[in-house]
Every structure is written in structure tokens, then in C-alpha cells.
Image 1 (cartoon, helix red, strand yellow):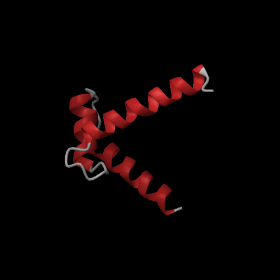
Image 2 (spheres, helix red, strand yellow):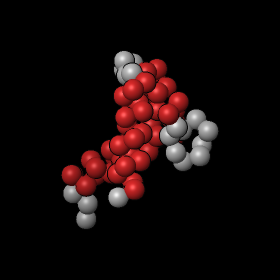
Image 3 (cartoon, one colour):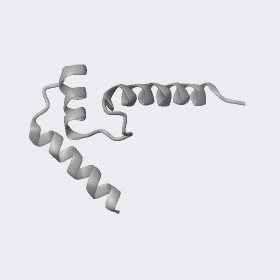
Length: 66
């Protein structure tokens, strides 16, 4: 039996999946630098520098390599 906390987490995951699908313009299952930049700057109205975007990608790359 799912608890209220489990339900909230499930709804949050579903929302994040929906946002990801909208941001993934070419539908390849990955976010490119340009897709992430568009999501943050245009869709979310954030003032994010190119250096910050590159830093995000560098961190993800580093974390994924182990």
C-alpha cells in the first residue's frame, strides 16, 4: 500500500519526466547544452551564463565517469 509520501514522490517523478520530455527537443533521451540552455533561460527565465552551463555538463560528465 502506497503512503502519501510515496504518492507525492511518484507525482514529482512524473512531473520531472514531463519537463524532461519537453526540454528534450530532438527526443534522443538526453539534454544537449543548447536544450538545457533553452530550458533554463527561456522556459524557466533564469539568467544562467554559458560558463555555468558548461560547468553543469562538466560535473555530470565527471560524476558519470565514476
